[in-house]
Every structure is written in C-alpha cells, then in structure tokens.
Length: 529
Image 1 (cartoon, rainbow, N blue to C red):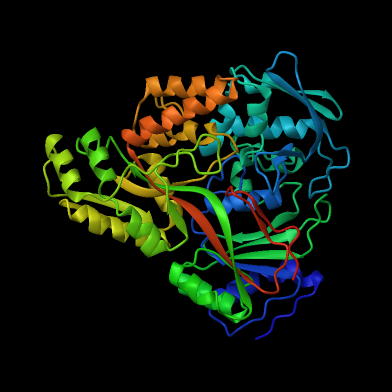
Image 2 (image 1 turned 180 degrees about the vertical axis):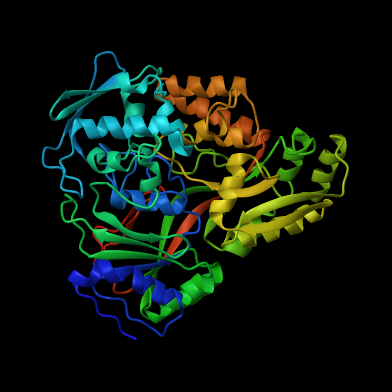
C-alpha cells in the first residue's frame, strides 16, 4: 500500500498513518514530506517540559520548544542564543539579564514576552515535578521564585538567584529542557485546580520550536507537525514517532522502507543491517550511563554496604559490553560520562564471584535469597538483566526479572516500590554537577534526586557536592568531582556499568539528521528526504 499525503491533509491523517502501520498493514512507502521513526515510546509520562524526564519526552523537547539559550549542536559545552539574542551577567555575580528576540513567536502566533519567561520558569519550580531539582540549584523554591524573575522592559528579563553559584553555571542550567519557554496565553486558560496547565501540556504543546504536537496516542504514536511561525523552520511537514516495542519489527520496518529511522535495535540486527542496501547505520557517542539502583530501604540486606560492594563483583562487564552489546556500550564505572570534565575512566571492578561471596559472608549476609528486579521491557535492558541474573545467581542471589513498560518502571523507582532496578541516567546540562546532583545529593529526602530514590541519606556527601558546584577555580572543581566519583564508586547503592553509544539506522533517503552527545540533542528541523 502506498500512502500519498498532501500538505493540506497531513494533520488529519498523520496519526492514521502511524496507527495503520501499527495494525500490521502491507508495506507502505513513507510520504516524501513525512519522517517516520520506529522506536519504543512506552517511557513517555508527560510532554510538559516542567515534568517530562524520559528519553522519548526529552528527545521531543528540542523540536517543540525553545529556551532562552541552547547547547551548541556540535559542541554541547558551548552555549548559543535561542529566544534570547544576548545576555549580560550582573556585577553581583548572581544575576543575568536576557534580551529577547523581538521577532520570536509561539506556534499560536503570540509574541514571546518577558511574561512568558517568568510564567514558564516559575511554574516549573512551583509544580516541583521530577526535573525541578535542576532549577532548585539556583536556590529557587516555590516561595521565592516569583521575586527571582522580573521583567525589565518589553524585551528584557532579569534572573537572580541566592545559591552560591556563578553566571556560567546558571547558564548551563538554563540549557536543560525544564527551562523551555511556554506560551502563557495558550497554557493559562487550560489550568485546572491550580496545575498551571500541566494536565493539558502532558499531551499538547505551546512552544516556539520547529514543530508542534499534532496528536499523541499513548503507547501508539507521537505526531509532530511543522510550525510555520518558528525561526527554525523545518524542511519536512511532519514527524511520526511510532511506538514499536518489538525490536525485530523495528528492523523490518526500516529495512522495508516503512520507517525512515529505527532506534534501539539489537547488536545482531545492527550487524546484519550494515551490509543491507538502502539503509545506513549512524554511530553517535552518548552521555547515557547505565547503572543498578538499589533500594536501601527495601530490607536490611539491600541497605547493607557489604551488599553494594559485593554487587560490583557480580557483573560480567566484559561479557555484556563486548559479547552481548558489541559496540552499543562501553564499560564505564563512574557517574560522570566520558566527554564531561573530570570523568573517571578507570574500571576497578570485574566479575569475581568468589570475592563477592566472601564480601557477603563477612558482611553477615546469608545466601541464597531472592530479589525483585523490575526492568524495562525493551532492549538492551532485558539482555543486560538476563546476564546479571546469571552472574548474581552464581553467588546464590536470584534476580526475579519483572519486565514492564518504561513508564511503570520509572514510577516504581520514583515511589520506592522496587528492590533493585536497572536504570540509565543522562545529564540534563553540560556540567559535572548535572550528574553529581543526582547521585550525591540527599541531605534530608527533600530533593527529587536518584539518591533519594535509593533511600540513601548522605548529608556529608551532599555538602561536598554543594561545595564543588561553588568552586570557582576550574582545576580544583574538577578535582572535587573526581573525588566524589571515587567515593561513590567505592561505596554507594549504585553500580555503574556502562556508557552508551547510540546506533541509529537511517534510510538512505534521510539527509541532515543530527543527534548530539546528550539525550535531548535530537534534531529533526533540518532533515530532508
């Protein structure tokens, strides 16, 4: 079946195209003005940039929203203008004044105003969803954020903060997806029970990016439509991101031409497609860090540091990276990914079952015992989980693998309803503190960090982490983050396993697709077919 769409019919039929594919219809050549992407989108919780914190959602945000500033596409450590044409730090070292682009417009046609910046950043803090801790780094809380963001004039807005950090770090924070600017005039009327329009933005958009959300069917498809008012006008009319949970089906779709891009294929499938005509494999360095998250509050065994230590020697790192994933990930045993200043590259742990058994015995932990192990029902996570099940089993620890859709696994982790789970972490901005704040801050369970999800209260490490972000000497600052990595590497309820390398399969027809080191750096605006 060949589907031909005109621009005028695109919006009304795009979701139908996606669902038709999902229904298993015959081969359908993708329309020339539509990009079809096959991947899993089961992780999506919300497309509100103040809440969305999953791979699918953050990949969408750079295409739907703009921020005041943005990370450079080729070099994420550099910062480029976006909605702000320029910015100036204050003499006090704790403020920034931004001059907005007077030509910038939202998809609604409304101009981008200082009021929209104020509304967007303050609502993100007040909603206090999963990514809120990023803006909390500035000392912004629900009771003080309104005073921290003020309109200077019709084109200028000033941000101030109380935290002991400088303008350079503040700029890094403002490149994170949570700092996306939404259209107040479009969102405010959708507010229900003081939610700042959050329920509506879960499945709709109100941005100034290259695309808008035309439609979203959970676990089926996300359809993005071009935004004619955007300063970054896309080359294509639409992007259909199909939910294809089965990796074999993804391979078949891209191989037959029913999809233009496929993500998350297995190492075997990637290897087979390298020699296939009509497709190409793009290898993209990734800042994704895969790790085991241990719930220290689940029971006495999991809260015992001896278990954390033993777990480090019950991972077949070489087998997973070299034999199982074959180029899709590399062994990495620290919380900062390679590519970030100060990242440790040593790998002190290897599979040593006898050593792990001794550590368990010396720590008073008796085997055998069983652990619930919820994991994403997707590759490579299931394959990694099976390897871990085998190696842990040799020490008398039965990992009970419980596959689930990603959104459910995230919910279990955030609510503490798990024992051990396999997770990944991707930095929110290009600074070492992005990861340090997640894994090494939890003074009193008041912050939405990974350490809190582990039930790991660490006031001393929290203070050390806060001292690192305040350090103005670059070399000393890197040294502080290296010291933190060593401490967590030695003893923490996290077992750092791998750093990813994304392998994306593209049709030969696809040109100018760009993907960067960080998760949100997926760009569809310049793609052509």
